[in-house]
Image 1 (cartoon, rainbow, N blue to C red):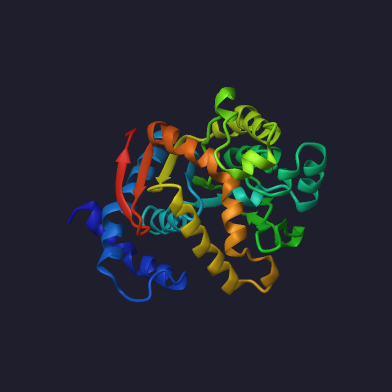
Image 2: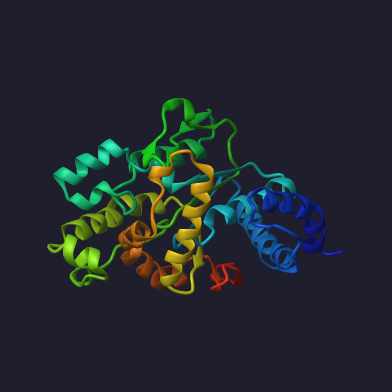
Length: 308
């Protein structure tokens, strides 16, 4: 029996249990089991290899368009790495580091009105992100707390709801739509990519500020990541379709019904992400260590190992 098969037998029950809990799987499907064997397990073996090679806390960046399945991917990798390889894995979403609603309101008045909406670089607490990386890799580890953001209320939760990191992680996965994004050259910012940029950022103030943040603060944070894993969506049109599915899930979970976005609101919301998402589709396919290509059915098509 080879290692892949042995890992498959050891982890398939927990994998299926997770899919059922997340309501991803209503009944047993051949495709789901093939994905575990063909994609998730080989990727986990690659991560284990990188961890052993480094010999200390490994930092991974997992990115992709909105609704591409980053959170699901992270959790499945954690199941395998924890249960088969016995690694302590911590997953953080860059979304949890969004600035508070109040802070973004201030930015909307002092910098540009579009900063009221979370999403683009500049709307995250970069100092908290840096501190998180520093704490996670300390030799003399001490437990620490991380912020928790609730999208249904568009604000950070109170201190008592913070995420507690009690054990030193072997592997840290930072997942988020813009993780690993690179700044654009200034001349590329001039041409708007959608009506939001054309009519609400006529003077390029919002675009330039977000781009500068990517060039400076976010570049420092992303330089602390050892490897990037990029989930490549088929095209930007799928972002709307998959983001709408996310909102449906949130609608079923939350009690704050008024905060769930309508179809028109989702269409506008994803325009905030369009420029950087399109640029990432050009950049990350070349620079990421692993590229996971997705088809229009939201399934993994193949894994591309750019760096062994």
